[in-house]
Length: 81
Image (cartoon, rainbow, N blue to C red):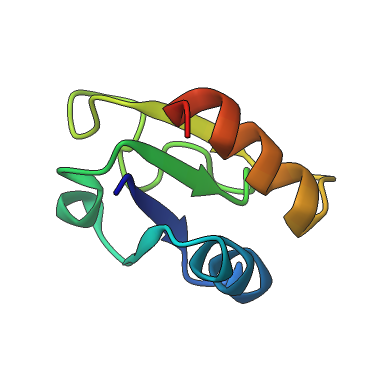
């Protein structure tokens, strides 16, 4: 099952992804992104946690202006589930 890192403030996205069967990890600090197939960030502080560097091997999705459903569709496309 793909592991998705989600920024803490995106609780609606976390719930939506969990309901679809994804393993969801809250991103509180940079090392939380390690081992994630994809990360969802708010986009307000895009590189505050360093998720755009080598900490993550997967995709980073900027959730700014998107609904939880739209974000889930992006995650599905990125991780191929």
